[in-house]
Length: 362
Image (cartoon, rainbow, N blue to C red; front, side, top):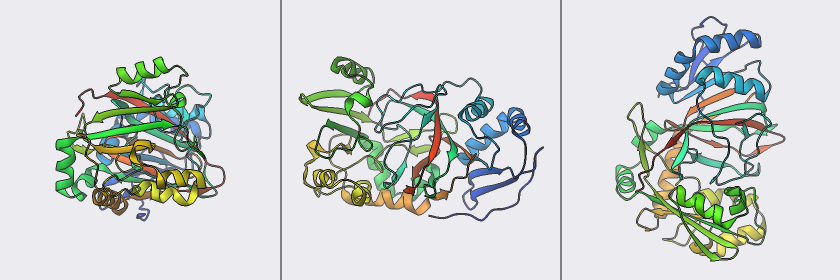
């Protein structure tokens, strides 16, 4: 993982530095504002939405650094100035982790996964038919230590991965198998219940939501719901046409069935979870793991493939350390994001924009 040195760039109407986090690959454009009033910056943003949108397509990520904005209302106002009346997600149904809503409509807190656990690179909600085309983050309170957001260039990732791996996923697709089951030591901040995931206590409503979104359900027992869905593992960007390795293989898989071992994602979590949940992960078969990802035909994804994918993300990741008032705009096709472990209070707000539906299942 690398950080690029800051470069002084041109200024446009406001005193600012413009640079790129990964200049060798032209990834992640940064506008750093050293000193300006909120109304001045708001006016600049309102005058330049086309420039910002073009930069997002070109660089995958656009960052506003050191802004004078401090509140959720200002966050929402800025995003409205950039993207206009673009539709936003009002709930997180079908999500893998818990998210709290802010008092501002359409604004969420980032995932409630415990701070001790890192979060691997992923495209937001790529396991569902309906996912955001754009993600916007805002730092209200940075962590005392850690808590950076590593990001990856998805156009570069697909070129970094072994071509045989990409072709295999492209031909076979991917299957997501979720087990919502109460277990000893179960931490709802890591893997939530079906009631929280589908925002209902009604089995019938949960089943209906899954059915409407291309997911099959099976009640293994009264307290164990299994949800399965097949998805394409690659998508093309709707505007640029870039082919993207667009899936949750690197994040959500908890088990590598071919060798009866845990995935890289869960092995990274083991030191930070309860002894009961750790024992569950280590001793439980694939049929009871919270999330197992297979090829679309049901064949387990090989351990070597999981390691290759995790290694490719790690090789190209660029880390961004948050300051208060920072914004990060992400094209959910062109970039992935994660989270480093952290200490202390950390409050990052998020808006999920441009609902995108791809109904073709693999």
